[in-house]
Image (cartoon, rainbow, N blue to C red; front, side, top):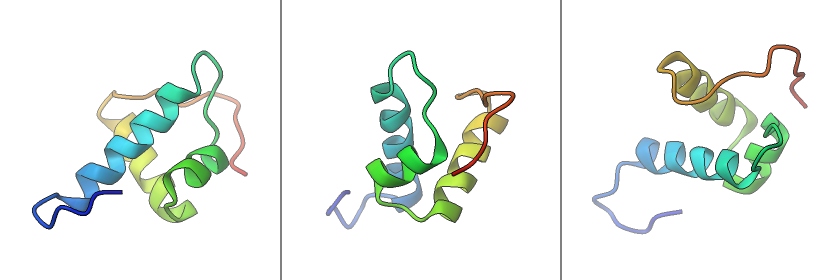
Length: 67
C-alpha cells in the first residue's frame, strides 16, 4: 500500500477500499472483491466498509450477501 512512515494506515486502507469500489464502476463491489483488490482481511474490509457506509461515503446494496 504505502511505504511512507508518516502515512496513517487506516486512511490508506480506506482510500484503497474507495478505489476498489470506484474501479467496480456501475456494478456493485462485493466484499470478496474489495478484499482481493486491497489485500486486507475480510474483517478489516468489512469494518472499513461499515464505517464508510455510516458516514455516507458508500451505499450498501440492500440485498447483497458477503462472500
